[in-house]
Amino acid sequence: MNRLENRIPPPLVAVLFMLLSWLWDSDGTESVTMQGAVAAVVIVAVLIARASITGFIRAKTTVNPLKPESASTLVTTGIFGYSRNPMYVALALLVFAFSLYFTGYWSLLFTVAYVLYITRFQISPEERAMEKLFGEEFVDYKGRVRRWL
Image 1 (tube, rainbow, N blue to C red):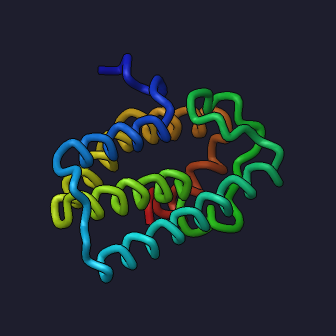
Image 2: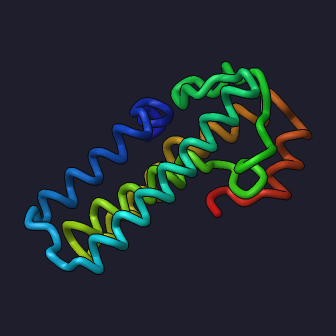
């Protein structure tokens, strides 16, 4: 199972879960209320993703999730003061929104599956790399800021 660690880009994993939800029920909702909720979740996801990427760019560190050992800076400010993984939160919200549009209540299944996969095969290996790179600074950060929300 370790062969899957840091192998598949998280956006691709999100797209795969969205595809699964579409295959589950490709009709989509006709409810205007549900469409509005989906749009609101997408907007929040985009804002979180933008803030996350901006934080990494300002810190002049890598945004490549497949090579966490190449990080040059531990980003702990801005949105990273609320979540250690806001980019994955944004992707989880996109999976939720997409699957909500197609599957309604089943969207929770796809979102939880995405979160479990990303936690096991992306976040855990990243955290090991961050601890090696930044030591006690990362351990302190882990103690102050939640992994997801």
